[in-house]
Image 1 (tube, rainbow, N blue to C red):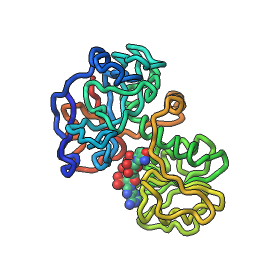
Image 2: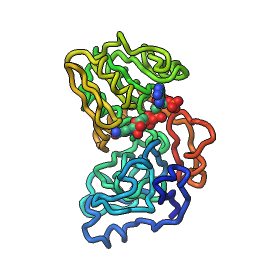
Image 3: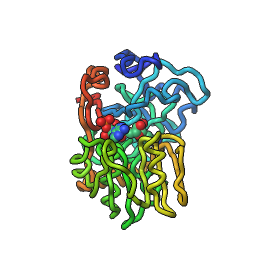
Image 4: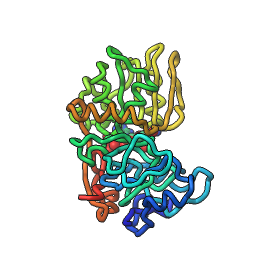
Length: 313
Ligand SMILES: NC(=O)c1ccc[n+]([C@@H]2O[C@H](COP(=O)([O-])OP(=O)(O)OC[C@H]3O[C@@H](n4cnc5c(N)ncnc54)[C@H](OP(=O)(O)O)[C@@H]3O)[C@@H](O)[C@H]2O)c1
């Protein structure tokens, strides 16, 4: 099968190449005699990639710490199930699905991928594969940050960093839809995009100060200096949730939580429902084919929103 592979950690996205890799199929699932317990093969229709994936250790080593190159990046998927292993429950062959794949195994920038069934949810027939791949990572990260780790409730206030970005725009929409008051942040040029996604106020991090802001929850995607300063805007009893690694500062009288998103069938279902009925929309900046994927991830100018690879027309 055709796939995008990476072998050189230092090369970044410039090291991506289009290659031929063995195609996983039902015979392969069966031949591994239980090693693939719970897995399914998905015919990939659309694939998504997170900007700094090539910096994640799991892109280069497996769970036992062994070199796993050449690795196939992209862990966001929408496609059709073509084979089930023993133990794969809740899905059937021919079913449209979407979700996230294991960080430590080959990903989705390929014609087929092997995924644990529990990491996938049904993709409703009226949602395009591009949309499914476009909301899996952003939707799950935003959902889990706001509601699982941040325990956000209607009437509370939340500061969403990077509100015009892929994760931030989803967090902004989901928080608004849940009845929260949303303050978005970003660069000066992002103000209108953040407001269009539903932020009621905007803090321009290049020119405005965070002083004077007080919120129940901060949803941080940056870490570093911005993350540190954000601890100070959390009200007593509030929470700083971050996806940028262990926080360097904690709210004086509140919690700091960092987390890595996990695929979750129930959460994917909640997200799909909201996309279907127009309560949230995707933030896709570019759609490219697998043949054009290397160029798409090495653009000459910055693409706003997610780049999605349409593996099948
Ligand atoms: N832990 C997890 O489970 C998890 C899950 C998903 C994502 N993440 C991480 O979350 C981060 C965001 O991901 P994403 O896909 O949403 O990225 P993204 O689409 O690039 O969004 C980031 C947004 O923040 C803006 N921005 C970046 N640096 C800024 C700065 N110094 N001041 C103001 N605005 C700034 C970006 O603008 P420009 O485009 O102009 O730079 C962009 O609008 C990534 O680091 C990703 O790895 C973690």
